[in-house]
Amino acid sequence: MKGTHLGEFEELVLLTCALLIDRAYSVTIGAEIEEQTGRSITLSTVHTALYRLEKKGFVASYMGGATGERGGRKKRLYKITSEGFDALNQAKNIRSKMWQLMPEYKF
Image (cartoon, one colour):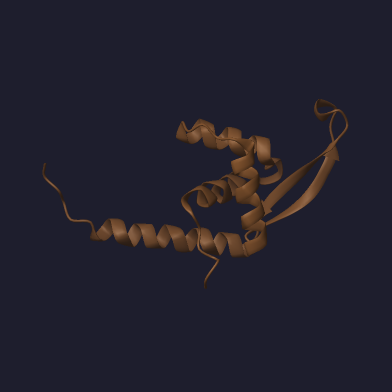
């Protein structure tokens, strides 16, 4: 299963693609991650993560319609694949399992 695990930022991008449904393109993905996490995100990091996720088969891209806000240019939109949902669920299950094993700390 080498090459199919999710890095932390890839997981955020994949979750955001799932949340945005038909509006997931690099700008909206970055803006949503910034809003939800308070992190400063560059478009290049979003593009890199999307490229990796598409290569792994976790997202698929397609060209949306032309819009006036982009001077008539089309947007490259992304949608999560069934493999992407499986990867998110696997990551969620692993994290939940680890949190359940966490001992109670008293500082």
